[in-house]
Amino acid sequence: MIDERIDREHSCILAIETSCDETSVAVVRDGYEVLSSVIASQIETHKAFGGVVPEVASRKHVESITMIIEQAVEEAGIEMKDISAVAVTQGPGLVGALLVGVMAAKSLAFALGKPLIGTHHIAGHIYANRFVGDIEYPSMALVVSGGHTELVLMKEEGSFELIGRTRDDAVGEAYDKVARALGFPYPGGPHVDRMALEAPESIELPRVWLEPDSYDFSFSGLKSAVLNVVNQSKMRGEDVRIEAIARGFQESVVEVLVEKAVRAVKEYGAKQLLLCGGVAANRGLRSALTERCQVEGIRLTIPPFQYCTDNGAMIAAAAHLKWKQGSFTPLDMKADPQLPLEEWARL
Image 1 (cartoon, one colour):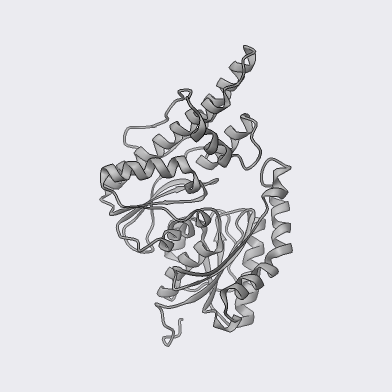
Image 2 (cartoon, rainbow, N blue to C red; image 1 turned 90 degrees about the horizontal axis):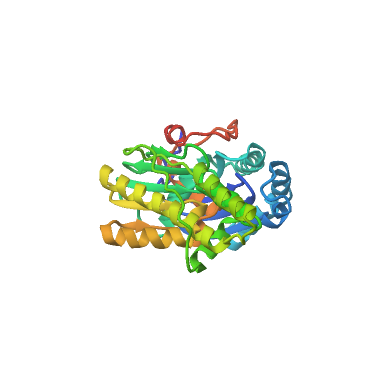
């Protein structure tokens, strides 16, 4: 039970994020004021393999987690005793990577005698929008990342209803696979985005809408269409039109994401559209969604670039919801690589 003397509105949360290949720790006050945000990226390590190697990611987390915690506290200008609670990504993510963060958070919470708050990775991405301003409810979140492409309806603070999801590749996965086919290094998404914006022309590629009333997504067929264009060009002895393919691919992806998000906002009467996840850093998507929402009169919120990719600050923002509820996590908490968002909201 929460101590009734605790101020439930105000907090200073230290949050740890190790769900994939970034080791990140942040200190955030009251769910929106970032005192520090430290990220140790593993991109250079995994670039040689063309993607994230889970075992390597876990070992890199182990090597850096203690130093990152100390750096985050120092940069925040506080002492350990000033921390209200310790938050950590409980899931989803790579199980080995999650375990490193979970064990570090448990140890720190126990040593300091502070509450532990297991936090959902996607809830973190969604509530990173709090760094821009208040969220109005009901609200619709378009989650786009390497492992997730979802539309999430939030009728009130801390409630999540999944109304659409990808049936195969997430949009970030599709970008990386297409980038590999076009000869770009890992991570390929930013390269495709840049090439698409610079290309003078595009190759028309299919849009996958699925059933007329569906809010689900599918990008596997689009990825196959790109591979088909590349292979046909090579078989004919022609130069592969990399720029045009990149632009055609991005236009297809962006059109489907924008149309389904706008339709969902209208159907469910949402007051705000939140863009979140690593692919929210994609300039083509940000620009197209901004223009469309201006036309439709929809309030759109997008986090700053540094809070789109995985970071500890977003985990602290979501953990503040649990802090206000007095909903803390027991020290026997286990990492859950498949943790459902709706289930976490009920914990």
